[in-house]
Image (tube, rainbow, N blue to C red; front, top):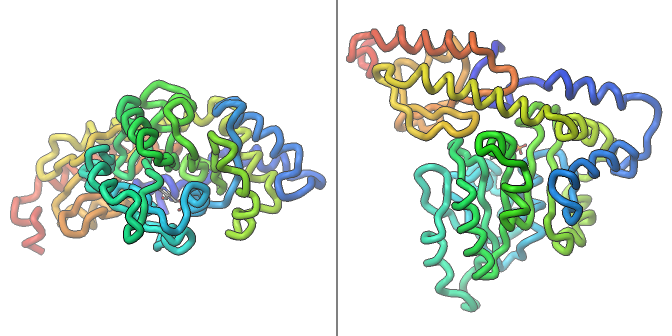
Length: 352
Ligand SMILES: Cc1ncc(COP(=O)(O)O)c(C=O)c1O
């Protein structure tokens, strides 16, 4: 399939990451995270997230979310999350199954949640008939590609502290947020008061592997047992570790994020003002959301695949990644401009 805008999951493995994996593909190493490469990688995590942090690897993002939140809640608890959050919508009920607790879906227009919407749910604190809110999950960047500002995150963290709630961040694409806001990874996480972070790898150029970063070691106390029970203890851990070592031990994470952001801005700029196309969200990371006429979908998909995010409104999501080329963006936008010259009735999909 040619390069498209379907997802940063659709791209391959960044060549530097592949090289790093090949370099550790020699000889024997102890397994289950007891190898030298894992030790080196964990030191790099400490450099980014502080000596008081503790990091563990898992295979995928859903497991990272479930296991991270599992260190915060029990089954009588409730978790606040955006109605658009991945954990509510796209994890097939994994958090509910594994944690047994309730997720309170908060209203949102742009993927972000607000303190005012959580407040009302605290009214039944202590009521034995009601799941007790105990954690908040924020996604940065959000599923809509928007960003919380540092002040917005601080407000949520302060609310969490005042109300004895623990704070989780789904940072599947955190690097894009850090580069867009011009800050380091710690400023967006530990410094704000995040208790546990799901940190992505696969969406950012790795072959597989995600990390869970605890900012409070006490919360990580039984993690190794829970991870094994949840079938997420990698045996040849060196291959996840080597990927993160190259990615976070150099400027590669910044370069990939910078390029993805640039391509998203170019794409947005090219589509803005095209007749029939309405950009629906701020473009603050590597995704562009837009409503397009139904009749554009098939011909545009021939130019570059994308997902229709909302089948009712024909809002689409276009995602850029490390290997998105300027030429791909321009060819896609030119196709959209060409389609925009169609007569109005044809654009609406009424004519064949
Ligand atoms: C915001 C967010 N969180 C978590 C995940 C879960 O990742 P995985 O598909 O590896 O389980 C995804 C995947 O697309 C995601 O976009």
